[in-house]
Length: 308
Ligand SMILES: Nc1ncnc2c1ncn2[C@@H]1O[C@H](COP(=O)(O)OP(=O)(O)OP(=O)(O)O)[C@@H](O)[C@H]1O
Image 1 (tube, protein in one colour):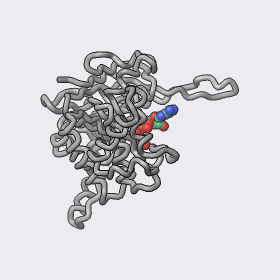
Image 2 (spheres, protein in one colour):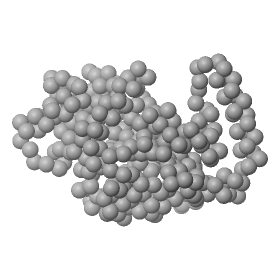
Image 3 (tube, rainbow, N blue to C red):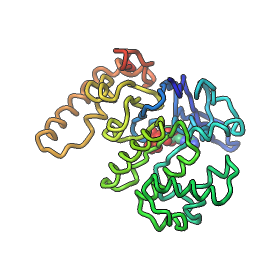
Image 4 (tube, rainbow, N blue to C red):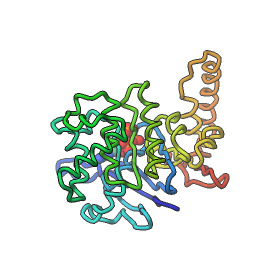
């Protein structure tokens, strides 16, 4: 079943200038992006900084206004809804943020942090609320006494677990995870990722994963979309894209992944040079005269590429 269908999404931010602060141009942060998420799957949006992946994720929860296009969640279009009208859907769509240091209010105790979404949607007695919070703390591997503590008393990985517990209390259907481990030490990244996979099984969650790390996205995601300058350049099954990239941008992104082994490193240098030559000689195969990626076209039933 399709849970989320994003159709020709555009998010353009106005650039103002001059004495009267008139709109002089727009940043086309997202410029015609379409993809679907099936219930229970993990879909990844990957791309370098500024490619528009976070803006896409935030548009789905209406943290960004949508310029045009549709965001169909269980068939209902969220794009045109006001912030008030979107409220009932906030229960079903939750977000996990990148930085567990700044996304948790340092002045609040864990009980209040995790209970906040519950308080917005449900009328519970303090005892019921405490029980739910403690159950979720248990699910994310934190002790019941944690409810009395403040965020600074936890490590980065533990804080991210608090953020995850908060996002789960309303039993959402879709979780948007924006670079959920990139602020964490490498040693705890895998732990948090595996744990997100366990929770997915337990709660039948669907994830939209946003990130710049192709390794993480491949590990986590059944399918992915590669973003470049507000457009999808390649989309489909993660393994297929990773093993058989077709767009020059995807090829370069994969070739840029650092390697520790000296022989592979040498080969990668050669590959990068070859790709730079291909980029220069075949530019018009991949981008139009304005430098904009073409619309996606299927090259198999599970793989689409933006080629001329
Ligand atoms: N509120 C805003 N106002 C104006 N421009 C914005 C706004 N938010 C994002 N942008 C611009 O839109 C483009 C896409 O930004 P976005 O954050 O979605 O990229 P990203 O791929 O997620 O990068 P990063 O990984 O650095 O967050 C960038 O050029 C950014 O400067």
